[in-house]
Image 1 (tube, rainbow, N blue to C red):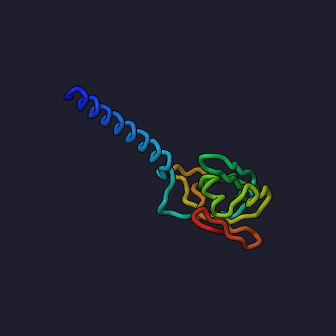
Image 2: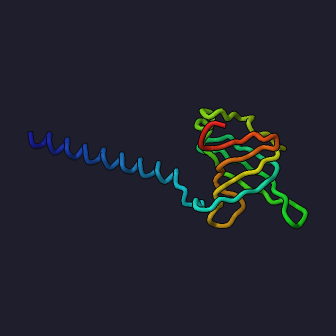
Image 3: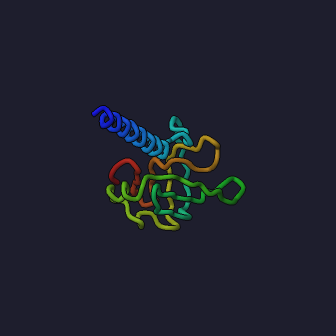
Length: 132
């Protein structure tokens, strides 16, 4: 009987360890550590590229700079599944759309960050956190 209890206890400990390891990995995946979540910036540009992929979509826009050219900004969004439940589709944004994006900037200073919301030139507001 003691051998069975020891095996059961050992199995429970191993299972708990595996669950903790998987949960830790999942939490690390959803880390916001790359973004300055206490700061919000806004830029206006033209949609250049959209990656409708798991685990998160990416939106790239060209933003005019003071040198007469443009800089590409990349914005991480939520998962396609999350967005589809909030009325986004693959065609909600189209290449060439003009958009003003509010975002939490990257801590390393690169152009882009975490997409908070956007406003298209026709006035339509897009958000990652709720219905349009």
